[in-house]
Length: 352
Image 1 (spheres, one colour):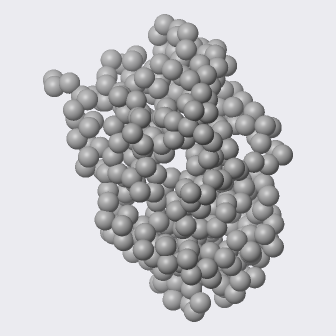
Image 2 (cartoon, one colour; image 1 turned 120 degrees about the vertical axis):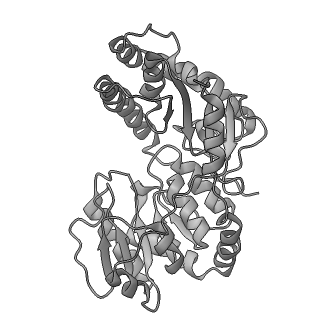
Image 3 (cartoon, rainbow, N blue to C red; image 1 turned 90 degrees about the vertical axis):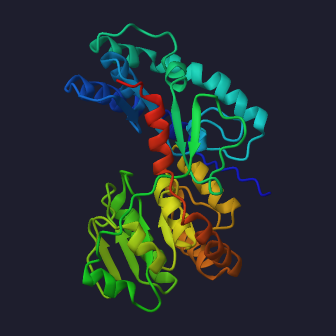
C-alpha cells in the first residue's frame, strides 16, 4: 500500500493559525450562540459545534451525541488527530498523538471552554476536550471510502455516510445545457472553505481546466470562488451545485476534500483532484490517492495553474484512475446511513 506524507514549509504556521482560530474566534462564537437560545428538544446532535453543543446539552439536561464524518475525528490508531497533516504514520505514532495530543490541546483550550461553560452556569472542567470525546458519538462515513477500523472507542457507533436526498431538485436549463457540452465540464468547488485568495485561486483553477481542454463548472460556495469570473462559452459560475444531479455528468471534480464532497464524487464514479485546506481534508485527500480515485493531492497553498493542470490531466486520462472511479461509484452509491443514525439517536434518548 502506498504511503503518503503530506507536508510543506507552511505546516507549523498553518496549524497554529487553525488552533488560534478555534480557540479565539469560533469557540467563543459557538458558546455565545447557545447563550441566546433555549430549545425545546430531547437531544442535541452536534456536528461542527461540538465544543459548545455538549455543554449546552448538559446545561439543558438533554441527551447529547457528537456527529463526526471522518475516522480521524475520533481516537483510533488508523489516523492521526485532524490537526496533523501527515498521513501514513505508523499506528503506534497515531495512538501516541491521540493519547498525548488531546490532553495538551485541551489544556490550551481550557480557558476558552470553561469561560463559555461558566456563562451557561456550568462547572469548569480540567480537560474539556477529553470530556467532549467521551460523549456518545456517531461516525458517519462510507466503510470502503473511510473505514473505521477495529479499535474505535466504545462510545462511538459507526454508520454509513449520511446522504441528502436531492431528487426533488431540478436543474436550471442553462446548467443542463452546459453539462451536455463535449467534452464534458470539470467541476470545481471548495464548499464551506473561506479561501483568503479566492479570486486568484479561481483564476488558477479555470486556467488549469482550460489547459486540458475542458469547460469549467465553478461552484462559488463560501469561498466565493466565482468572484470576478464571468460566464462564457466554457465557464459557468453557480453559487451552489446539487451534487447528486451534477457530478455524475462531469468529467472530474476539483475540490477541497470535505467529507461530503469527497463522498458525493465517489458516488458519482468520477476522478477527483483534491486541494486540501485544513483538518480532515488531508485524510480524505490521502484516501482518494490510496484508493486510486485520483492523483496525488495538492495542498491549496501550493496550487499553480501548471501543477494543477498536470494533476487534472492525469485524473482525466489515466485509465487506472478512470476505471477505478467508475468501478467504485456503484459500490458506494446505494448506501445511506441516515436511518441507522436515527435508530442510534432514538436509543440514546430516554423515554419520556
